[in-house]
Image 1 (cartoon, rainbow, N blue to C red):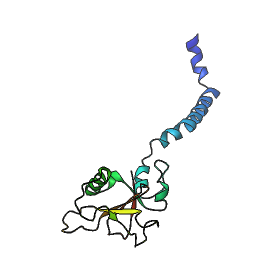
Image 2 (cartoon, helix red, strand yellow):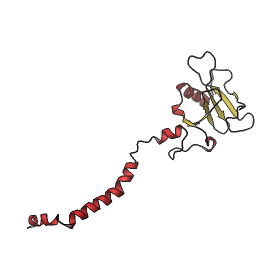
Image 3 (cartoon, rainbow, N blue to C red):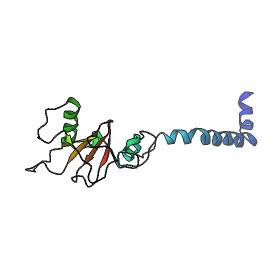
Image 4 (cartoon, rainbow, N blue to C red):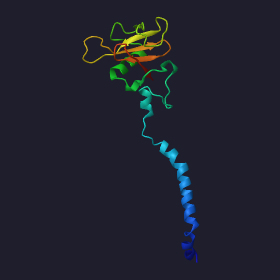
Length: 154
């Protein structure tokens, strides 16, 4: 008896009702699932200086291009490690006061910033790469001898 009623169950309104429920279910469930599978690299966007909710830049880096410490050249990461441990530094000028004469960084009193050389392979002198730190924990990287800086996100 039950087998004879099965064909009648799927005729008429029932398939349309099931189809409608399926569409509603997919409309409610699918968008959040797809949002979690996005191929956009928001962490990379933050590192390049664009806005991202994943890792907001600190207030001292507002309006600046940013770079994650892990994305810096290996020599810059080594310099950061030396700064974190207090040295010893390979260059005599490392740790000296950075005057910010180019005014590329936010203005502060003299002595707020200190500079450290980032070794450049193939260069015989100090090269153009530097890390500049601020008294309040700021870290900046330049690879063009102070013409531009990126805030380092750690």
